[in-house]
Image 1 (cartoon, one colour):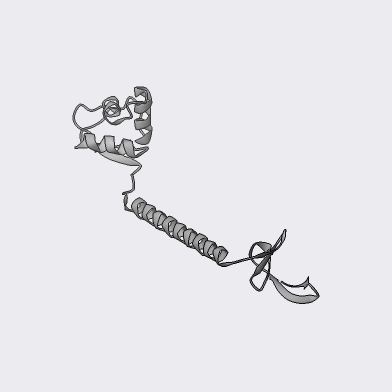
Image 2: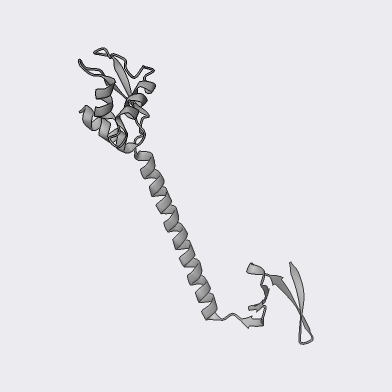
Length: 147
């Protein structure tokens, strides 16, 4: 947007610059009138711009590293398959692999529901049972006990 400013019987062409300030040849018009912009002002502007660019580069690099590190972690499965051994019951499996902070009957019911079994079902040796995994801590605890 180009405007004409009246300056001591002189007309000068001016433009509206960044942040809505009216600029005229080396001067900036703010709400308080014309203000000269000297070397110090240009230096501070350049330093501010350099700091902003450096900050953006640092932020971009940090986000890229976080994205890369997140992509390198293996996905946690929603369940782990276990082969039933002789003498295993849903109760024993729930006690061995279930969340120790959860009530044991809730663990048995969750295990039975996951495998479409009744909670009093008799398991056969060699049968595959799916143990539900809710988070990374569950996965680590279950795989540690499988070793």
